[in-house]
Image (cartoon, rainbow, N blue to C red; front, top):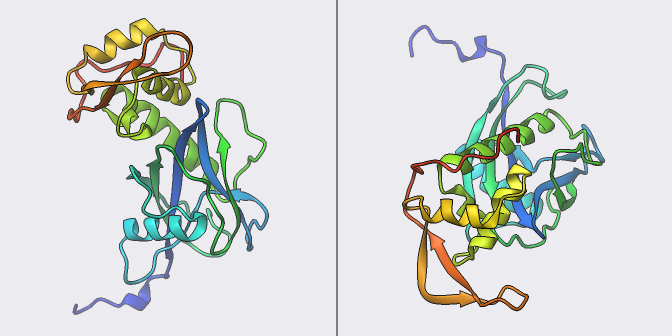
Length: 240
């Protein structure tokens, strides 16, 4: 283009960072790696890395997830772009702009470290500051933003079902809301609200599963087709 000089602008790098969540034993867990290289060697961080010249950001996110944690072609993986982080001093190496993604994984397999990560683990995420904090770079902020995004979307979309297997009980679905919101929900009230929300779930005809105890088998459901919930399932007042 006439009059345009690409060398007149300071170059910068583009990275992707992934805030990946799953539910384990009724608790929300986040996928974190231990950095094996400087800067922040030995510190926990979100999986991620540099976008290559020939790939899109989402392609890079999926590649980095596979390379750093061994999670590739995971059944039911939900991946969506969170936001862009572009503060000039967020990386001590150079100017780096990060496109952050959040991902939800049902029945997540064990993570294994690869690439430049020394290790990868699913670690509990909750209200209290975890023992692995602070994370490298601005990853505490990214992880908190992702948690808030997921918690908010549980209110007005069917995103909670992305944490569940293809067929699930209402008790298993309730565990998702409780784990993400950090709040106990009354089982009967939750069941009433879910079944009164068009398109959130649909029954699997004739299917049931024993869930422990002496009660009768629990009916199974699958994700409904609604893209927005009317009315929304609002989190309890005073919760994050």
